[in-house]
Length: 138
Image (cartoon, rainbow, N blue to C red; front, top):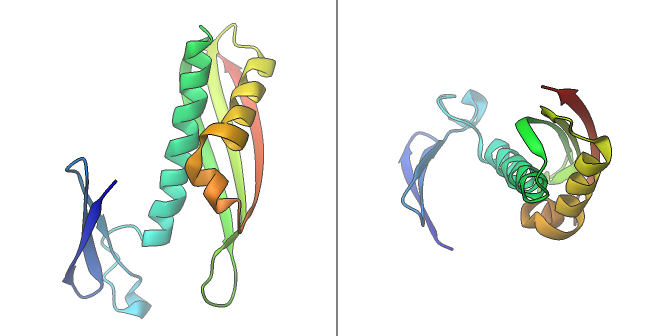
């Protein structure tokens, strides 16, 4: 996997991923940014959410469960001193589907957290990660 990050101006950066996609990042105004794009740490949290949500949907689909929606709400706390790593992350999944069983969603969340989501497993080295979920009949 490769990525190139280029300084744009002020405290704005553009990343070009190995798959050829562009992602913009910017700093807070008090750090010299113009608040035009997400902060890098916000993208780290978002990427982790995307990684685990991808897993959950894929696991449920492979189990032939009729998933119609998946929303993941993340909240995180960071250390107060540098390097200000994530110390706590809560992931709350809202999964909708037809006749979707809570046990299946719980299993998918657990498999992602413990086996498949490299991003959340990596962040789990510094952060306490908690998971919760709810199932909504579609």
